Length: 254
Image 1 (tube, rainbow, N blue to C red):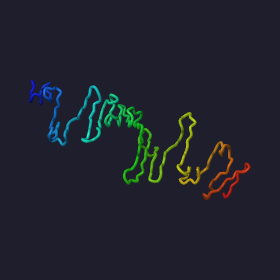
Image 2: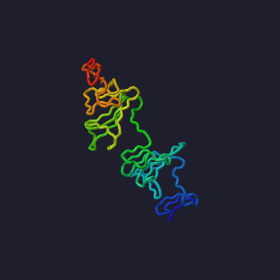
Image 3: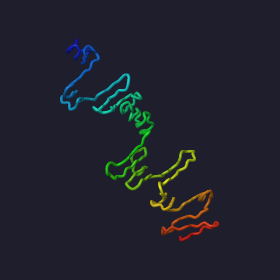
Image 4: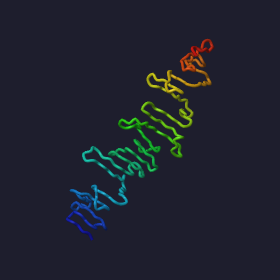
């Protein structure tokens, strides 16, 4: 038994305890609530939005495709959606139109620009920025901590201040190429910049404050060993030369 309003209209109890809307005799008609004004409330008598649900939540199920919640602003050129099962049955995605912008795998990896993230955060075909907003001059830092938690006494970070960029490690800092390769590590200051070890104001292409231990000697051009003059600093930080002539090393103005 069921109650029907009109030829189509609204049917109560047509299939068990369901409420069904019909457009004329079409069994697949739409059920429209408050088409002209007001809000619809489920579990509440005072809904504050077009649809407000008070309860344990809303479930969207789909048997033949992605379960999707689509959102579109009137007049917008496209829509955004939340979907499960779009590219993989158990994964979750944020889509712009048909394009996946953020993909979260069932294992917890997050992909931006990829639907197959291979790490906790996998960014493909794009850049990443860490910056201050507006006129803020705050230091911005990207930190890596050991697996056992945040310990500021045992960390590695790259940071940017208003004046300079810093790389810091609380323990051994090793720069290397891939294992087994003969790749080079190259420091290339921009413009007329120099490289400093033990100093923040290098005056030459390589400026070292402290002792230098070269186990195979120095190289100048195609020659090995100490074959040219060395520009160094004396104890008063005054520039001087260690002159190499005829196999003899002598100091000048040191």
